Image 1 (tube, rainbow, N blue to C red):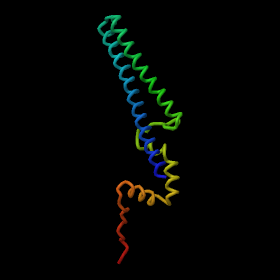
Image 2: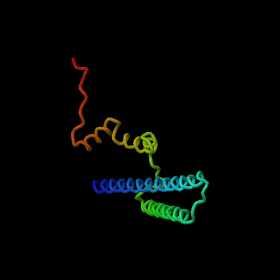
Image 3: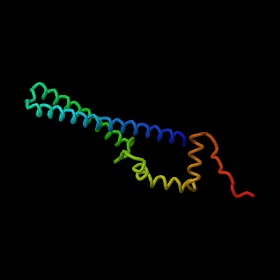
Image 4: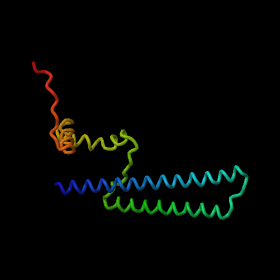
Length: 141
């Protein structure tokens, strides 16, 4: 059972790393598009044509960025097919998105553990290697 948990943890770390890579590539492509657009706008404001060597350099740099993006997409597709990434995995941009994406799984696990307190207790004991603290009994006379 623990080897399965270890494999799932490694799979989650790999998934997170791949999704981080995907985000980095997407930001890089967006940055290149913004950079090229700004350069073209500067030439337009100055009323100058873009020199051939500048245009070729921009095209080559963008083509290279697109190739890297394509390779990362292929990599993500391969890992998705092998089960490392769940199909249709959506990155969460906020805690709310994350909660909505995993609500069914959280509810299922809560039911399996016997309630929210038992789920939190198990998580606390696993993370901190301490017993779940019992709240003080305020009703004793």
